[in-house]
Amino acid sequence: MTLSWWQMPGPARFIDGVIQEMREGRNTFLLIPRHFPSGLRESIRRQVQSSMDIPWRTLDLSELDSHRPVESILRLFDPASRIVGPVTFADMIANVKLNSGYMIWAELSSAEEWPPWKSFFEEYAHACRAVPLVQRSLFCVLLSGEPAIQPPLVDVCLAALKWQGVVDQMDSLLYASLQFGSKPWPAKKRQLAAYLTAFLGQWDPTLIDLLHSGDFKHLLKPHDLLHDYGISRGWDQCDFKKSAHKWAEGISDHFEGMEREHAAYLALNGSSHLVTHKVWAAETTVLFPHIEEFRHQLLDAMVGRLVPPFRSVHGELVEDPRELELSDLLNLLKNDPSLWIDHGTWGCLKAMKFARNQLAHKQPIDPELLESDDMFRLPSQVIT
Image 1 (cartoon, rainbow, N blue to C red):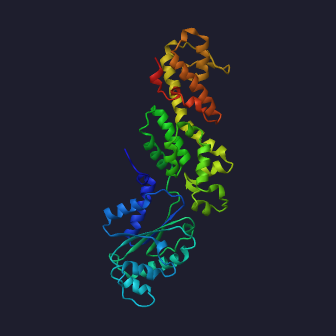
Image 2: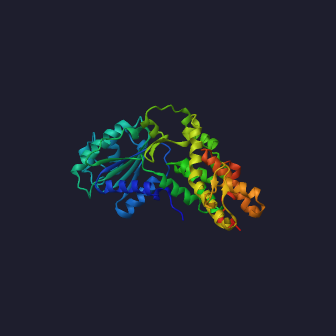
Image 3: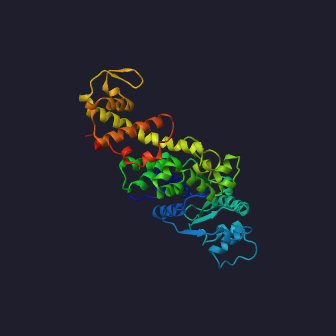
């Protein structure tokens, strides 16, 4: 199955919100951080063309005169306009070619060019009140970086939608799972790769794509990759104190109930321990239940040969075989030849015991251990 990032639940809801604002006749401004993934314009355009059936036009604001925005846009739509002298908003609103129900897409990221355009869009939105909805041409403007934290004033005919807290863990996990679905790996390894990628990538599909394209070992030790990724975005040159500027630069977002910083920014700024914690959290989420399932199935397979009572490695008396821990099982197997198990199961048991101890101490599992299939076999595949 191939689904784009914009079909994930959070991004799809954002696009639905944009379409709803435009259906209700509002010029809509999308407040977006820098380094935003591509595809938003085309996703909105497809929705507009399939559900609203109105003509679409794309403007490059950098090619227009920001000091004379009214005249620039009017003459762009109607080059043969016979208006002489300064062009007013009244001229613009009265123009038949402009007010034929266009959807006009534009993008702007320049802080220097934004102030005059901001005034223009606020005045245009106010003037739109006098234009019937079916005739009204609407702007859908993507503002990124600095302009995104200085949006135009919301009005009856102007809405501003901020890309903040749009993506949650479900979106990143679903997207990462689809990416790894075709990998020829054991199911549990694919699941772990998806969780590692989602926990590290968070709201950033570009990073998720990069992690997916690399080796599995980079997911287990991602610090160098994240460091280089942060440098490629210029985050080693950033020293923002205000959260608004961090958001505008793509460094932080509201994610899973709180403001969080991008994993690449953490790797660049002396917080590598937080990156390590993300790796540990993903491994714990996927492998702790897997290890417990292995323990239970192994005990079920051996229960007829296990005669209580037992003495645990901590010296405690154990009456129920199902309460034996992995370390207890290893100790019993070493000291009782009658409890023989095959070599494959023995290798898995040792790997599981070592991994569980590391996770219990909040340490990521040794990468060499996770590169072996012993950690990813289903219990039924190794128990004989």
